[in-house]
Amino acid sequence: MKNKIFLENFEDIYNETYKRTLSYIVCRCANIDDVNDLLQETYVELYKSLMRRKYIEVDNFQSYIIGIAEKRIKKYYGLLYKLKLTSTWNSEEDYQLEIPADIDLEAEIIDKMNAEKVWKYIKEKKNLEAIKIFYLYYYSEYKISQIAEMLEMSESNVKNILYRTIKDIKKNIEIEGDKDV
Image (tube, rainbow, N blue to C red; front, side, top):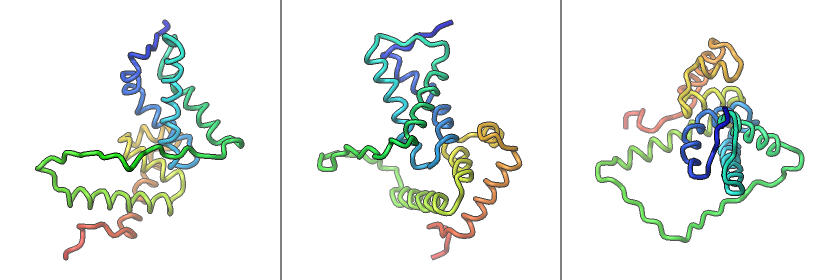
């Protein structure tokens, strides 16, 4: 049975397919820094297709979006792809943020700095396989069995890589707040 995807349903389709599409891209990318660009390009292409037509008729919209992602990955890593898009963020505009009174800003900043430090270490010191496992486990919150299936590895291999990475991080990264001052 064919399903129709309308522009009005874009946000629902996005929310429903985001996690699986993200994991698909993570498993197939050559550089973990490219994941967000590829994910964005995938959904932008879907959105543009919906803008051009009234609707898209497909058997399975998740498979359709994965197909778009696959094409985006091939194009992204193709020989002709030379330039990355630059940010269009305008830092001169005045944005006001409302910060809740009950937030511990210092703890939030320390947590963010620690996460950035760990992520930088992983990207610099670990192989792509370890990066993907770490990303899928901690960011996408997949179970070890799901990661093993996605990466076509044994569960014990995924566990070994994950736990060795954690042990290495604990040994080599100094986390703020862990030491007595």
